[in-house]
Length: 65
Image (cartoon, rainbow, N blue to C red):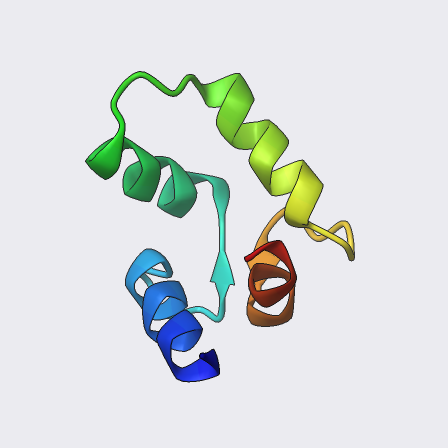
């Protein structure tokens, strides 16, 4: 549900800026899977970042999920 997606997004968006940046995504991924390298994390951002801002906003997060 959108409520569950919002809760997940808010956990990853550690600084509560409204966007998930590279450092926040890296921290979240490494918390659950330590073997992911920076290049793979950068590719995840690039795939989800529809507006080219360099971060993932909530709409992009929903689309990704």
